[in-house]
View 1 (spheres, rainbow, N blue to C red):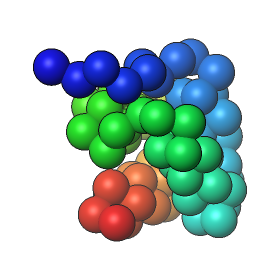
View 2: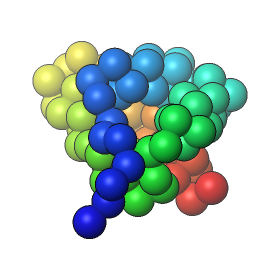
View 3: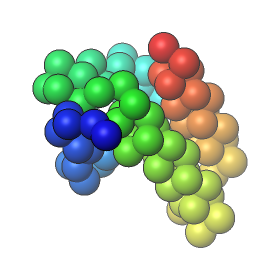
View 4: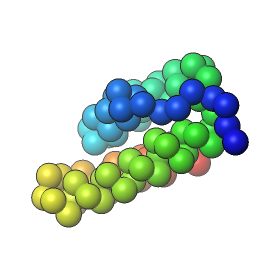
Length: 83
């Protein structure tokens, strides 16, 4: 069980916007800052990266983002997760 801080709504929001804009550097900065703030990699994966993937799918299904937005954000999110 992890004792690191948990991912909050503000962090999720600050990650989603640049992700949808394809801003790799801003996304990387959000993750780096969260990590520096004590959030462990596992928690980032399970509480930020994966839920964001699910949110992207939901936004697309609700016609709130285009297929292009979905594909760009998904690829960027996967790339960041791999790092």
